Length: 315
Ligand code: NDP
Image 1: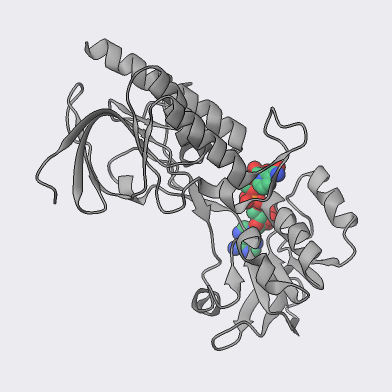
Image 2: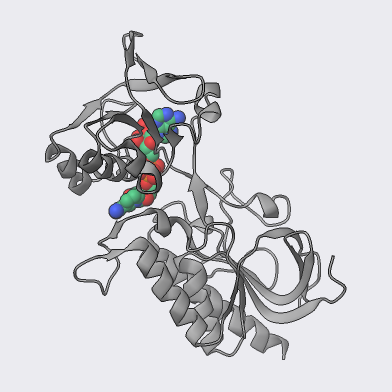
């Protein structure tokens, strides 16, 4: 542990659209924020290629480029962006007192306000064979790993917008993509469903679930099961992409901050306030309903304003 404790006004945890927007507003309000980015700098959008629905980009933009723009904008107003993980929090101090946070098990920080913008992570099915082959052909990010399956056959598990996005992206690279959808219909929006209709090398198997990923060290195929008939079949694929939703990154705050039954942080009313004074939550970590970059950015802005107002009341 470092011998000196850094005292700051505003700590931002997480570097997605919520974190960077909070940083832009907090730095412009002279809160001199320090941001810890987490391991995936830029958050989930860096695993997306095209972002077509963020206002202000008439021709769409690239997720990684957009996050770099947001970072530059936050730094322009004085945000200190640091690569690192928050490994422990002590939020037991009373209103007006600083909260203690440990970074990478070594550095201690005392922050008067904390904005939690740690986002959410991809969920997996939990099959033994799936877990064993992560990195050996099982992935939750087509834009990160799709390139390795050029001209090969892959499956995508899930029927939501993410699954369709992943599947249509992979269809551009792969010989064939098969989507496994557990119900007899997709959850994805109509606009996304049209993408499937337009994609020739994409097949959807309804009422179908992944039973096992076949292969010792690398994926050689999958066994799938029709949940209506019980009939099993094997499909030869080299890649398995899991796209079944996300889990909020809140383990660090368990039993400290009030959460719902699925681990999303509960914020008070229309604000970003958590149950702990001086601690605010923004973005996907507190939103399981909208989960869009633009709504995350909106709540990031709100969190910075809430933090500023909280500090003003202490003066
Ligand atoms: P969703 O929760 O919307 O969909 C998850 C999908 O995975 C559903 O089809 C669900 O099936 C299926 N699923 C869940 N668990 C399992 C399981 N154990 N086995 C098999 N299938 C399973 O998550 P998404 O990540 O797709 O989307 C999250 C949010 O992000 C949504 O609001 C979406 O609109 C948004 N989004 C928007 C995009 C865009 O507009 N460009 C792109 C990507 C996401 P079931 O339907 O049966 O529950």
